[in-house]
Image (cartoon, rainbow, N blue to C red; front, side, top):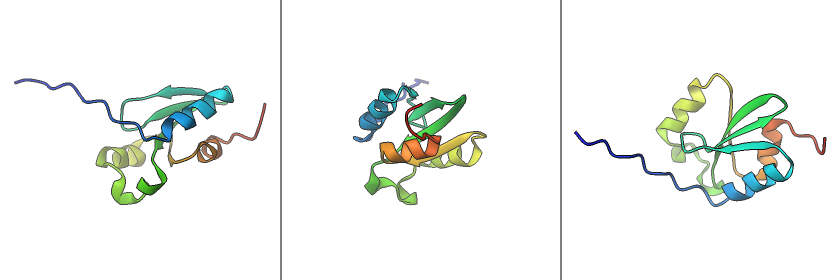
Length: 96
């Protein structure tokens, strides 16, 4: 039996802007190649973010593995499409 390596998922076009924006605000970001796109560290918490283009946020566009993660992950998990949404999810209130 041959095990095929997992193909890297293609990131949504808006992911780079969200990552750059969070990092510009000195918020820790780890880009993942898993069911969640980003692990964001802020104020001692780690929040998993799934980045979706605005036109792909409908429930029918969420992958089964992403839905499972959202239902079973014991920590914070959210789907975002913009930097402003990501900042709202993590509770960012402006320059520290």
